[in-house]
Structures are given as structure tokens and as C-alpha cells.
Amino acid sequence: MTRPSHHTDRAPVVVGTPGSFARSVLDERHPALIERVRRATPYPPARQRALDALLDEITKGFIEPLDDGEPGAERWRDEPYYGQRWADVPFLWAESFFYRRLLAALRHFTPGPWLGIDPFAPFKNAELAGAEVDDELSALDRLPGLTPQERDRTLLLSSLWGNRADLGFQLSTGEAGLADRVRGLVVDDSHTLWEVLAAGRPGRVCLVADNAGPELLPDLVLADHLLTTGRATSVVLHLKPYPYYVSDATTADTLVCLDRLTGASGHAAAAGERLRQAVGDGRLILRTHAFSCAPRPYDLMPADLREDFASATLTVMKGDLNYRRLVGDRHWPATTPFAEATAYFPGPVAALRTLKSDVVTGLASSTLEELDAGAAAWRTSGTHALVQVRT
Ligand SMILES: O=P(O)(O)OC[C@H]1O[C@](O)(CO)[C@@H](O)[C@@H]1O
Image (tube, rainbow, N blue to C red; front, side, top):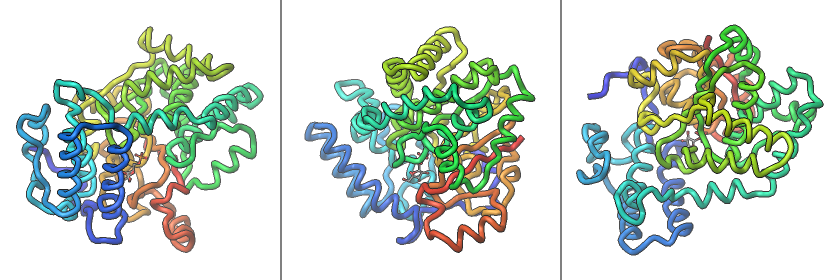
């Protein structure tokens, strides 16, 4: 049985009525994703029929549980939402279960020819192969011309904006590059982030990764920077144990990114070599925990994961989904202090996130007023970002 969340006084975001952001994800993005997956890989007739059935269910039907024979089905057995309409359940739960059902339809966990095949690999590979990535990696060679503070800021903001799915990652250095990336910040606690790291050294940093490819590359370069500047004695990189939310990073994706770095030249290649060595001598630890793909907020994390985060000088949560899970996917007034929403977290925690869903905390009322008076979709369009830290 799942314990109750600390945040039960705030209503969770449910998929809800047409017109809401959450509903558009279920009504539009998920059916479109099924089609993309089908087109990207030549699945046999039985898998195609399973995709048809899933599409039918999410568009017209009621939530069905995983088959009992499905590996790991016991983890999902006691959920309270089966038999309900997809639109009536919490958004966080619905999205997560959709990805689990998609993998079941494709026999991802079933011994046989499709075991372990990542349905999203074609998209992830295409992103990483782009010439833009070559340009961005070459831009790293300009880092030595920056002051140490500019280097810190450039690499932190590259990791942050790497989370903006449609952007590629922006390692373009120098004043112009920085100014561009600072403009969209709705909260910037980055000075506190560096202070926490300085006060806690030598220490371990947990970096909870989000997307593969163009986001994971700057995350890895940031991890290298933390190690080489002595901010971290080790970095624990939390990855997804299986393909999730399309582009979330797995161990396989990390190895591909390391190859992409070492296959480049200059600073990128050197960072790639150092990171390979760091994996080899235990300073870069790749970790996957089942809870990383659970449909739950972090306040319900199990004891071993809590201990992991508690032992870190700082835990850095990347991306939108991790943010939703960190503060609970709930209707917080946007001015609720970030520290209040994350009070349960067992140690200092930072969020590096571009805004791609409705939930947000920690905004100054003046910022909120300004945002509400401007572009309508500031919460969901990925044009804005934040660096929030709770010490
Ligand atoms: O990759 P990120 O930054 O976690 O973003 C994932 C976000 O995309 C969505 O799945 C919508 O497609 C959000 O619901 C989710 O929070």
C-alpha cells in the first residue's frame, strides 16, 4: 500500500477537461507518439495490434491493468485507478502508466526477440547525430577563454537549457550566449547552488538526469566540471531503468553520449575521456532505481533512495517531470516558497528546469504578474526556465 503524500492539502493535477494542458498530452501527444513509434520500427502484426488496442483504450476506453504475466506487474497491481476513464485520474499517474503500457504492448520486458528494444531509440539517435551537436561540442573549446565564474555559469545554464526539448543544447559561450540564456529565467538561485557546493566540499553530488542526447551531453559536461573543479568528489548520475517519457536517459543512452563526447575533439573529447575514467574508478556512478519510473512524487520515495539523496552535498533534479515529482504534481499557488514544497526532501536540492507543464512554485508575485500579463503559455511552452535551490 502506498503511504499518503505530505502534500494532501493540495489537490493533484488530474488529466481533466479538454482544453487543459494535461488533457492535451493524453488526447494529442500520446496517440501521436504511438504513431511515431509504429513508423520508426517495423513491429510485427501482433505488436501492431497491441498498439491499436492501446490507442483505442486511451482514446475511448477505461484504464486496464497490466496483464498478470507481464514482468513487474506486481508493482502496479494495487493502483486505485483501473476501470476509470483516463481523463479522471492524476496526470502524473496517467502519463507514467501510459509509458508502462506502451512497453508492455511492445514486449519490451518479455524474454524473446523484442526484449530490451528501446522504441524511442530512433528518435534519440537522430537527435544526437545532428550537425548542430557537432557545433555545440566545438563551442566548448572557447571555455578556457572565460573566467572561472563565467565557466561555471555557462556550463550550468547549458545543462539547464538542454532541457528545452526543441532547442538542442546551447554551449555557445561568451556574453551574448549567456545573456540569451539568462533572459528566460523566472527564478535564478544559481549563486546559492555554487555556495552549497563550496560549503559541502569535498562531497558527493546526485544528478538526477532527465532526457538523453542533447540534454544529457551538457549534463555530463557539467558532471565533469564538478569533478575537475573539486566541487564533487563523486557524482551519482540517476538514470531511468528503462525507456520512459520518450527521451529519458537510460544507461545505454549515457554510454552513447560518452562515445559522442570522446568521438569529438578538443575539450569535449577530453571531458569524455575523463568521464570514462571516472566511471572506471567509481567517481561517476551510474544508478538506476525502480522508483525513477514510478508514478509518484518524490515525497513518497523509498528509504534507500532517500538515504542516497541524504548523503549528497546537493541533489540536482533535471527537467520538468522531476520538478513535478519534486513538488508533487499539485495545484500550488505559484508564489508558494520552493522550500515549503520541498521541505520533506532529505538534503539540499536544486531544480534545473525549463517550464513545460502547469506546476510551478517559488515565484515572486511581481514576476508572476508580469508573466501572466505576457505570453499565455509561459508555463508550458519551454520558453522560460528556473534554477531553484533549497538549502
Ligand atoms: O523532459 P521533461 O523536461 O521532464 O518534460 C517532460 C514533460 O513533457 C510532458 O510529458 C508533456 O509532454 C510533461 O507532462 C512533462 O512534464
